[in-house]
Length: 207
Image (cartoon, rainbow, N blue to C red):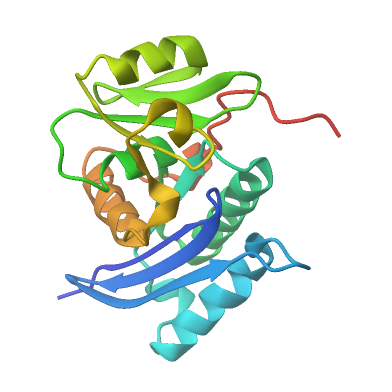
């Protein structure tokens, strides 16, 4: 019986994580933080290579790649998507993308999660009722947070305004969550790497 080997990685949020899973077992899970001289995505390819070597797994052994497609750092989104597309094309594996908003909605077992991440320009990337609502004015997001209908999941920048949980204040298993969501998504999609595109809710900065 062929093994299912999933590689998941994310460079869209404030830390990079890379996770390797074989069937039902997590083989390796690594988290890389930014340094003073390098943004964490600079280590993505070398970290993937190290993890595969440590587990004696070749690129062609991978059956599925799951990545965070955004929103988040524009540099991180580009790096993550480009590496995944090149890897999937070269190895022949399937590839799927999951939104950072959906990933963060799973860090707690609440019934009605509301994820709001800083989108600058007095807006927040909003995810409620299992849907991405786009970049929404902070005043509207604050009203939703204060309604008491949702468990608020946000970042350090918006937590003073919205309350709730900041994902940046605890080491949540984001890589494992991403892998789980990717494995669910591949059941309903074809995993064609051509369809793996960045999720830019707002246009990237010029230049």
